[in-house]
Amino acid sequence: MRTGLSVSVSCLLASIFSGLLFFGAAGHGPAAAGFPPVLAQVREMDPRLRQIIDRERYVKRGYVKRDGRWVKVKPTPKARRLVDKLSDGGRPKLTVHVIDVGQGDSILIQTPNGKNILLDAGFGPCSWSDYDAGEKRVLPYLEYLGVKKLDAVIVSHPHNDHDGGIATVLRKMKVDALIDSGYKHTATPYYDVLKLAREKGLKYSQVKAGDRLKFDPAVEIEVLNPPNANAYQGTNSDTNNSSIVLRLTYGEVTVLLTGDAEKAAEEKMLRNRYNLKAHILKVGHHGSKTSSSERFLGQVGPEAAVISCGLNNRYGLPKDEILRRFERKKVKMYRTDFDSTVVVTTDGQFYTIETFGEIPSEYKGYTVGDTERKKYYVPGSKYYSRVYPGRRRYFKTEKEAKAAGFEKSNY
Ligand SMILES: [Zn+2]
Image (cartoon, rainbow, N blue to C red; front, top):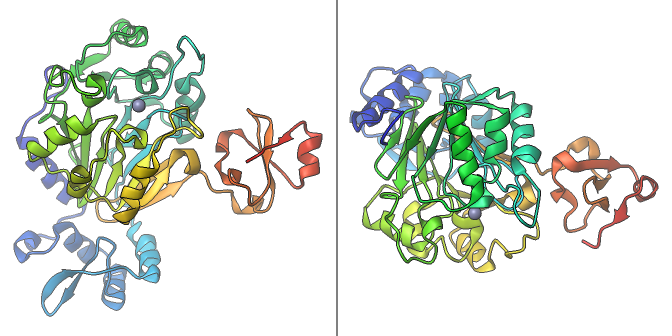
């Protein structure tokens, strides 16, 4: 990082140590004993959890002691539920919200010490649309969460489906810092963003691979791409490849956010031998064929993945080929077009993934109206549970929906 926020290699160590402090380090040198250190803290802290681990022979990150050795095991559903419940012992959480912004990306990172970092803000007004995801989706969601201030806004790369909503966010929300890669931008929306940032006196920094974002000592945020602002020349899309890629590590849990990075960037990260391992992957470029190459996925080895894309988007994303690739690797897939906002929460040991798309139990069996499209969907139809939650109106019967001026959807 060049200006504004301080970074150093030693902050990796600092963050590991403060991570341990968070969990109330037990002080018997767990790392030396050859098993996951954070797990050791959990076992020290919560005797109920220990009982369950012993009884169910399971912890969610999957280690159990057998014949004096720590081995990886598969969870049982019962254990998963119990551990989920008990692991919620008030320990600080890292939460990553992949916000449903339609076609585009917007991700809110909430760190254990209460920092709020927004990575992209979805689509913005342009020559053929005045839709502003910043206004329609991001700000309402931040308000819903009670976020009053953003410690930083990061722009992965200057494409409208990522930076388009940023200007509105800067205009209407208190923001401390703006971060980008310094990649040359040519479109008006990004000039506006930079102008606004200057006017409002935001700290401005450019980051590159190898930097670490030092917002919260409990979470390590590594920048893995781009190597520099001009690293990609003549690739399929130099702008996409110059996406800021972030790897978040909290305790034992890792999350990889790849923006729209394509194969060239994936290759570069592989060649640089970065640790790409992640439990949860925000899939590159909305599930396009340009990204998620076999080798890259092999190195990341995610357990779960999230694709941020719009329902029936004009690009036909995500591509079946990419979905099948994840399926073959048995990666649990979430999509903002079907699941709406996807929320990953972790205490550094366990993680849960929740989605906003489900129909609340009190409305099971109801007809769902989409207030924007004025269409309604009956239970069992294809897009029934995929209507954006903020636009839903529930009707007991189809007749009621029709009477309210809604039309039956063909889907
Ligand atoms: Zn994009």
